[in-house]
Length: 238
Image 1 (tube, rainbow, N blue to C red):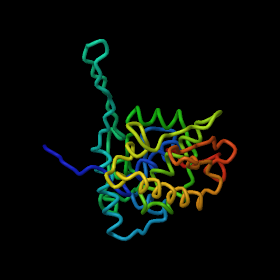
Image 2 (cartoon, rainbow, N blue to C red):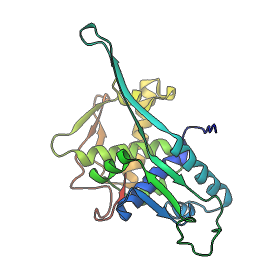
Image 3 (tube, rainbow, N blue to C red):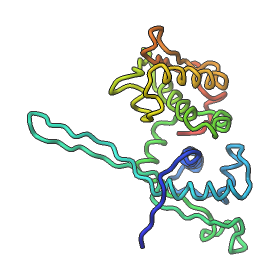
């Protein structure tokens, strides 16, 4: 049977965040939950039919998504292809209706079940990054800023010493990593980045990030003393 689905977009990015959090709490890469509407509650989203259907479709898009990493090089004149692939889930068992077909809601046949890929589970289990749920909820409808916030949380949390200096422009620049034509003009990208930083700092005042005086670098310092969550004992995990 052929199965085609669009690539993930928009609020779909909330799904792996929520599932990763459940996996850490349940201490297993096989995650169970009663209904997809729980995720809407978790991120303070409306539980109307439109949002519910949107989330269910988002699970399908995330399941079908495969991310490829790799390079093609020619060291010493020999062509080298070095590729890897990554996906989030190995199995998706999700009921589309709110009503369970059996009386017992804990029966394994009526539970919603997600099996995380081994690579995804190992990554979140080995590298737990504290993320504030309320900030994610506040940015749920602003995917660009949400991605930027999550990137800052991750980068600042893994730093232990010197700050990281990330170029804004060029082949390895932040504008290239974001990969959108909207930021083809340097001044426009810098203005957008300044706006995003202000939005993030309104929600995380101690965010240790700024743009350099020459406007060419994003400076990120360690957040070990000012983590993105109010308490790091039970963080949302990415």
